[in-house]
Image (cartoon, rainbow, N blue to C red):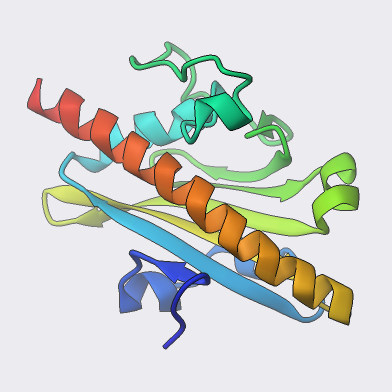
Amino acid sequence: MAGLPLVWGATEADRTRSYPADAMVAGRSVRMTRAVAVDAPVELTWRWLCQTAVAPYSYDLIDNLGRRSPQHLTPGADDLRVGQRMLVVYDLTEVEPGHQWSGLTHAGASRLFGQIGVTYAVEPDGRSSRLVCRFVVGERTRVQWAKARLLAWGDLVMMRRQLLNLKRLAERDARG
């Protein structure tokens, strides 16, 4: 079983489930899966996941130019469209409303990071939900392999914070 930095918080089902990101990167690639249990219904967790169209929800000082990510749902943020830019680096390639969105790094981001496919999903877990992210990075050359491993550690830190922030906000709203 894979461990850090490739997997964080994911169950066996999260790790082995197929996501659209798995097929986005041609050739040899590495898959990363991050997940967190959310004590909130799927619908509410989905709304908070869609807030990533508005702000990154990780470390605002680093990736949001010091602006605080909104702490309340933004009307219309859950109206995601294919082609829309998400989290600065992804162009949406697929949206399954209420369940998942997937994207691929745009040309500028691909030059910097290499081609990356991502799927964010909200999975039902009884009366609660799981927030899962699958992150797939190409690693056809030795340089790409090394870059993917460095990216895995950096992404782990940032995505862990993002998922925990989205969890906190969804759970707060579920209690309220």
